Image (cartoon, rainbow, N blue to C red; front, side, top):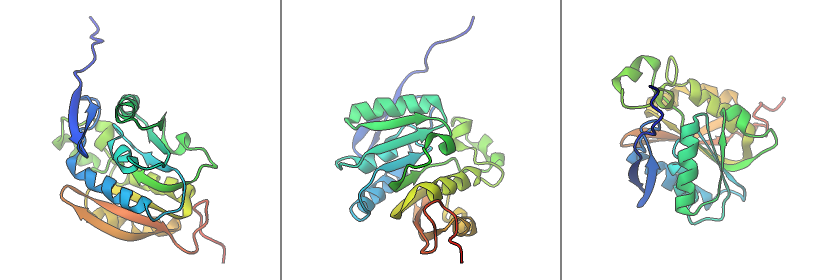
Length: 220
């Protein structure tokens, strides 16, 4: 007989508040609170405009980043279960979030622009995912070198970040950030900081002066 029962709900504390999820969604990593707090600091500096979170999972990073601000939030994830939990968590936190189920390249409209973009892609090389059997495969498998989805995130950032906006891209470690330097440059982005956390790393990305709003290099 087909088992259609829902897995039991779980809860984690993130930023001093509860985040719900279940076994089909990646467990919120405590260290990523640092990414949220960094984003919150940056929101005091960047121009007016909405916030985008891609590969948002249960939504906790983006929710904490905009909590207490008047910024509007768009959250995108390719996994339906993650979107369901992100919606529940947004309601629980009292934050209005436009949650979209779909690929990051399709769920963001061509003409949309954002002042801050959070990107939290899977970043493990495919050969390493068996070391983490408790984690959903789609939430951790970053392809051959672990950076397939990170490069897609760079594409989205290049297309949708406003001129003086910033992006924070979550990675496994600072070495992965160094590997992405040429990829970022090709898209008209520069890595302003490669910050190590106890559990991962986060890149701070800005536009290069010659970068175009559509993510292509300016013509000489």
